[in-house]
Image (cartoon, rainbow, N blue to C red; front, side):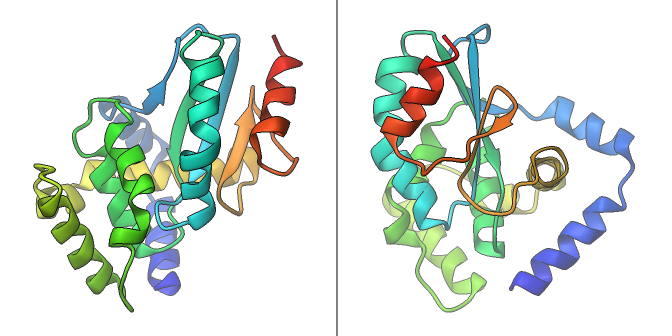
Length: 196
């Protein structure tokens, strides 16, 4: 599975910068918070990563309450799929192209219910079944085969590697600097408070 993803990434790198820029302009980035917030946090995440789910379930709610909802922090969710199942889930999270984070959070909070299976096909089937059971109306095939969304997700990953040397998930960037402390709310809060 990792070899297939590596091949996809290499193929994507062959696209011109113009194509990447054009694609990026047509897809809305998933974010929350005030556009003009003093602090911008970027999270690079993989939807099959248990540490990323832990961040969404245990750290993010406190961050949202104290800093995002009060207008101090803007958070941008970037895709950094570590495998093909995460790649497809990222395309699902991005598919409505409304810039909202609801579906992304939903997939993370229910990760254990759909990240099941010995191969990507099995995980895809579980994800498709899970979405249907939860009455999430989405055209799975259309979303996972959408070339613009596919390019957008891959571009997030490539940008993370090139710009911030991202090599694991979750990776947190605060005002364009990599957060290098253990990822818990206490450490994150201290770093934010130094910037406000």
